[in-house]
Amino acid sequence: MSNEDIGSIDGNMQATKKASRTGLSQKRRQMRMRLWPLIEDEHLWLRTKSVGFTTIPRTLPIVNRILDIQAGKGFPVSATYLALWCHVFDEGFIEVRNSRELAYESGFGGPRAEATWKTRMKKLESLGVIQSKPGVHGDYQYILMLNPYQVIEKLYENKPKDFAFQALLSRMLHVGADDIVF
Image 1 (cartoon, rainbow, N blue to C red):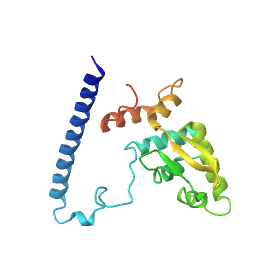
Image 2 (cartoon, rainbow, N blue to C red):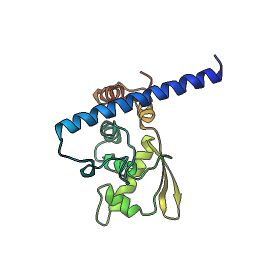
Image 3 (cartoon, helix red, strand yellow):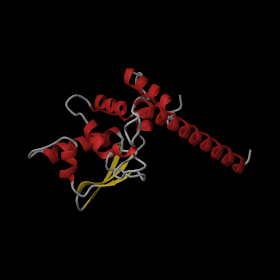
Image 4 (cartoon, rainbow, N blue to C red):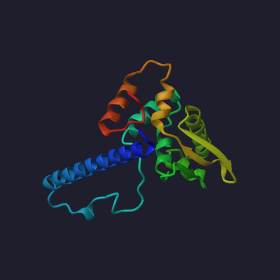
């Protein structure tokens, strides 16, 4: 099979997935309109019609639970990880110009806010879900968001697959994520 054939197959698979999503979207819209016939689109926050949205994994609640478990007691990282996802663009890259602001968005306030935020960032980096580079605005000015599925797969490489991991696999199957080979 030539590279051209493989490219054609990949393109066809992508088109099939997109058509499937479009059909499901129309069905959900029809159901919503039946359940709430008096609610117009203007009263909803629709990603395609509003600004200020980002794309996050549909499995993020489970990913966050796993990261909190892996981080250990006393170091919950999920709020910090969520704040990072709310700042990332499609390139998987964040430029932090105000760590105090990101610390606040992560749930930390008071005189130790930034110090606490930095400990959570260090923990996220040690877990492998982010990489960072320092800049003139601090130790975590440049953040790279890595694929959480691949990181979690690696975290569980030599560990028993617990309930949280099984829940993640189940949700991934449900949403069609294929980043981990089952």
